[in-house]
Amino acid sequence: MSEAKPVVLKIGGSVITDKNGELAARTEVINRLAEEIAKANVKNLVIVHGGGSFGHPTAKKYGIKEGLKEEAQKVGFAETHHVMTVLNGLVMDALVWHEVPAVSVTPSSCMLTDNGRINMFDETVTRMLLKMGFTPVFYGDATLDTQLGFTVLSGDQIVAYLAKKLGARKIVLGVDVDGLCDVDPKTVKTAKVYPRVSLQELRAFDGKLDKSTAADVTGGMLGKVTELIPAVEQGIPVAIVNASKPNRVYRALVGEKVEGTLIEKA
Ligand code: IPE
Image (tube, rainbow, N blue to C red):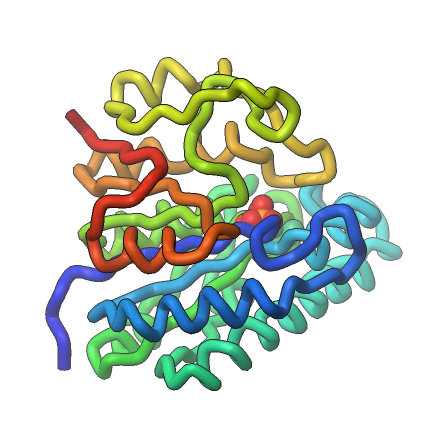
């Protein structure tokens, strides 16, 4: 039984999938990350992964985020959830293969949202998994919503929520760029990474950062940063690192110096 405060790791969908494709998993990246996670051997680790080219295109096609408006969307809700379980299966495959005691926790089965925000989480199983030394693995999912009928719950919201709820010691955000940048690094080559950002600066960014990737139904880097504010307010530091590059997630997990952005309360 381990009592250490949890570390919450998010692996972005654009890291583990090719967002330009459809249902295009990057299995070699998933494998490398599983190896890094196994090597880091963090006590009380919670993993959350994104949807990339699995969840987003299907969610967009059926307008899942906007909620239930017509019967025909129901199969789209089912499909969005299903493709996420397929991607999750690939992630679980790699983790278990590398002997990480990872157990999948399905957000749509233990969380409800109210107008897009988590308002119910049955945490009993997750807490017991952690207590027993397992690594719970969540993912962005299509979830039921008390106002909208259903919606899309982003992995980023889950990360911030779990970090707060479980009193995490830190959040590691694995993305496909080198950190939080002044301009979109995917379109502007001269983009600069902010090595350290305070809560005050983070609040000022909100609304200014570029909205990257229109195909992303949950809001790109801007959405990520906005989601993190409540966790940072609670004193939980966030390391944003490039998970597409080897060893950055490993270093962030074990607390070694690593290129990226560190967000701290003060
Ligand atoms: C999206 O999760 C899940 C669905 C679209 C069903 P995220 O919003 O966390 O995914 P990424 O990391 O941006 O791809």
